[in-house]
Image 1 (cartoon, rainbow, N blue to C red):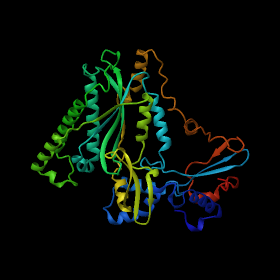
Image 2: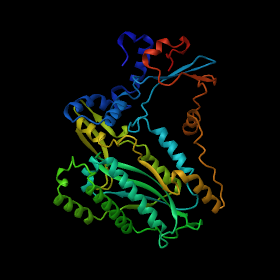
Image 3: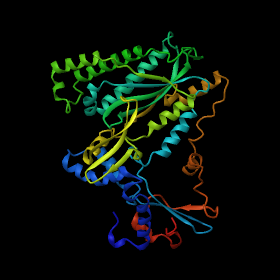
Image 4: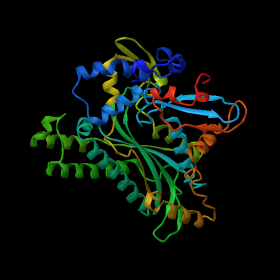
Length: 422
């Protein structure tokens, strides 16, 4: 926070201009909910992990000026602009729009034109949720690994496709009510490369692998490795202490085997571009968006949700402020955990070679990812049709100060860059 003795009229004007934009939390309600209820949450709940504390602090400071300001001015007319620095935390609902658009453009450049793509969702039984919460890194990695092995092995079977597909997906841990609900969204191509280096396209109507076959394979792989973790003593039973006992563990495993584990499969509508657009909404999304916050006061938060059990009707749910914080933070993944993964033809180490081969076999031209080498200003111009290097007043060249100047540095900047015209 900026010391009171360093607050100048210039700083106060900048602060007032930003505070007026989102007065009463209208623009960034989730940030304001955290600023209001997170201190109380710390008093009434166990001390959160370092990763959870980082996320909460980033959300509370995002776009407030506490992280500093971006400053730019025009060389020709002296027009100046100021923007508060974003936290860029992947769980912050204020900071993801540009990343979503960039991810969508990058995945679109990797699509194979002219073939079908399928949206596949793998979900785990709810009985395993508490065990997943206590062993997130271990079991989320296992979940991804089993999904990958299931799809790659079954797609390689000649009776289904007999080729390696391109697959990319994202892990989600939440439901509409912010409940813990781990599932993986995937986009699977309806064509791939055979062991003989030829390209084949599936001729099946609908998804080429029966859902029951997918479910049976995933269930067998997951439970087999889960039992190995148990035998090796790698599982944490802090949320489910009874499972540490052999008789309860055996009953738990039998319950998992009795479940259907049926995945959801749907061919993407309006072409393969829509497949990427759909998954892009999930790629960098936090557990809940600002737009879903209906209202909040000194004790409660009301948010909207879609009830899939009641014809997808829009409904509202009201919870205590501290409970909202708990629901949100339970979806913070372990540090450095990658929730977006690609495999098959899109495996990172062989992606370019595979895509070159696919286009060669299909007599098309692979142009690569045109957005990879773009700097921030070029990318913003593509994404938002706005040239931040050009002055909006006179068209002159904008000059930028280094990102993140702290608040107390504003009075020390050259006089011509004072920020009264933001």
